[in-house]
Image (tube, rainbow, N blue to C red; front, top):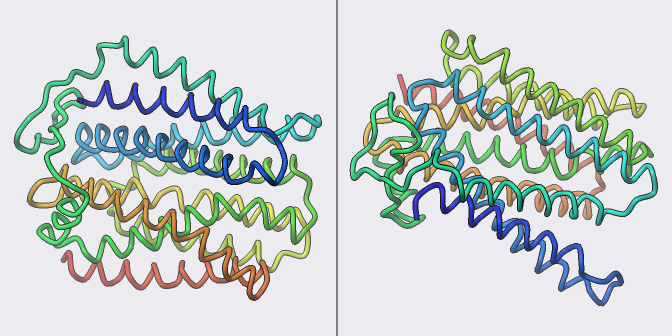
Length: 332
């Protein structure tokens, strides 16, 4: 379909499904219907996310600093969304307010994307050079399985393990970070969302400010710094005696983990072989981690308590540091 049509269809589908969530009646009997609408909506957001990542990685291959800056835009959106939702709940508006805003906004973006000429449907049959633009994104000719095989051909299995661990952290932090503040430390919805927003502000600032340094210290070192900061932030949140300390820990965790995904993608984009296939495979591993993370914390919290679930993530951060050391050894 090409990047423009794929983005437009994904955004419109996302908007329609957000509207479906909005219209599901309340009550436990409607929970399954709501869960179905939510699951398919997340699938639509994944289409948008994957297409944007493929375009950006292809256009900015060989430019990790610019790729990190590109991803900081995501954090600005997350910051605005979390703050608006927290304010809406504080003013006794329902969660449906957020879905309504999301549906209208994404529908407008989808229509604008469909009408734009910024992304053509032209494609290449071979990987583009580092100076290529997103308009020349190669056509997808493979399955998820072949994209994962590309990681083996490019000798990126160690990096894939790092990606899995850090994406697991990112998914769990975004899902459980605020919930821990609210459940364990009795924070209000506004305070919890403000702490998450502060983390996203830190993430956006970190990605923008640290981008020039990434070219000097190297992408793997940047991932290690981000993962280590996330682990320290999570430990601080888990052991926090007050909401303020817990909020600082959440902000550190959110800001630290933000470095990992774009830097890992920048490594894959410069790998030997087909960089587009490598990026697709690494993104697939990352999405798997985002799925596993919240479930792992949920099971641990249900069995041993919510604090144990957050401490589990501290252990994952420690494991990721060891995997990064292994990846550095392999790539030398």
